[in-house]
Image (cartoon, rainbow, N blue to C red; front, side, top):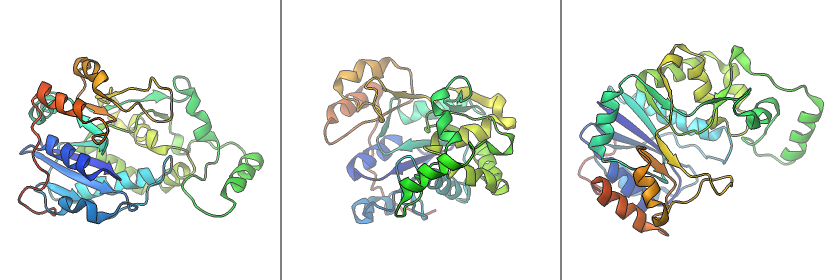
Length: 294
């Protein structure tokens, strides 16, 4: 069971190194997309670590923009073109951390081989708050003077947008674990449907909808499990989830999930140390002998 962990990172090299170490396994590779805005010199270990690959095409990522989808797709392409047969692609952020040992994670996907794990709800009736993302025009992915005024007039003068290609929209969390076959399907689908790319470039936070929608409207629907295997605490009600601390340890331990987010090693290191001890997570240094290229 070979797993490619795809990490979207933009900061905190020490925390990223710890995450990579926790995922280390003989059948695991880690592909890191490092935001183009980040200083590569602080992440030199990515070029020196065994089974770690820095995704060569780095995207300048903006919050809520299609650029997050582009960064993910660059990671998918790097994995697909690596020459290695992977069974699963596991999408993580640099602020995530496993709640199981690497061996247990690989065993889980071996037992559940062929299933695709992601959170998805129908926008039409289960996640209706997302409807304006799809019907309105959003210029989040673009930077030019007068952008907000242009967006205002687009929404005032033009009719509401509709989903292309007969797609039924579903989505929620962008973090997921997909079979390599599903990832290959997504890449081929977008190559064949440029109108879908154009549509989602004008959608706010499309990373929470596009991949789920493609797979939900595909032959892979029967393989979907509506569980992204992540513990995420939205109880604070903000635009971002709660930063997890030692006070969350019992809930994390009892969650039964494979991963959690989000963590801050600099401010709250104790919770990660306790998770290491609880679940037998071995932290290998990311700067192992070996190259960062395949």
